[in-house]
Image 1 (tube, rainbow, N blue to C red):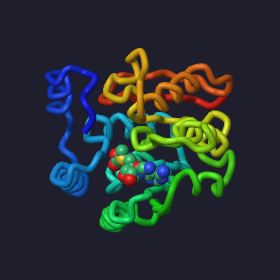
Image 2: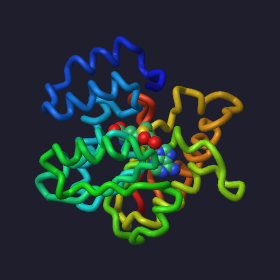
Image 3: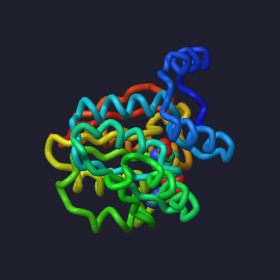
Image 4: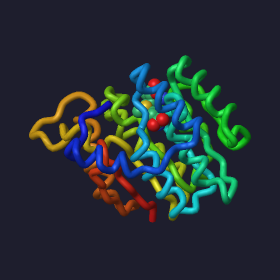
Amino acid sequence: MPDPITAPAIERYIGDLLPRRDPLLARVETHAREHRLPIVGPAEGRFLYTLVRLSGAWRILELGACSGYSALWIAAASEPGGGTIETIELDPRRADIAEANFKASAYADRIKLLRGNALEILPSLERGAYDLIFNDLLRSGAGETGGVPNQVRFLELSLDLLRSGGVLLSDNVLCGGQVAEPSPSGAAAGIAEYNRRLMSHPALESSIVPIRDGVAISIKR
Ligand SMILES: C[S@@+](CC[C@H](N)C(=O)[O-])C[C@H]1O[C@@H](n2cnc3c(N)ncnc32)[C@H](O)[C@@H]1O
């Protein structure tokens, strides 16, 4: 779990106000706590839910499924329209858990798990076809491909897949506050570069919201 950007008392306050989750979401939260899995948690899950509802997104892609928690929130949000969610996970054990959670949900026929490395899977997906992309692997994306930080590759690949007017949501953009240090290192360095591009990209209108570990909301022109 990343260090919170907001004061712990505020995090607790927001958490205490959240409505009770359905039993499956509550079980996935407990499992993640017990096994220290890096899921978005209920406050951000609810925030994602609200953004998906506002966007009216129909075809959705998630980068980083983990045990499937955020995908379940997203599926619930897109329920009235009956949209589809494709979600990518590299770790086979996490992918197995996510798949079992999707099967146990009311959205089994609308969530598709793509197993493997997002860097390899993204170029094979349909360009300009997605209404909303949730990028939740910025913190796991330390490393480079051909001298380009992986986070920047994820941004380029995601923009190819997003339709005009589509929404890109990016989690962990504040990386525990490390992005604001004079010389961030590791994943924070790649995320800082991701943020610079996100905020100045001619095809994007972006805002960073300091909720939990930082969520960026971008609209593709
Ligand atoms: C922060 S977790 C996702 C949490 C999930 N979105 C949730 O809130 O329920 C990031 C996940 O991305 C996976 N991951 C990391 N690098 C990846 C890559 N290159 N391709 C696909 N998945 C990757 C990790 O195994 C991890 O489970």
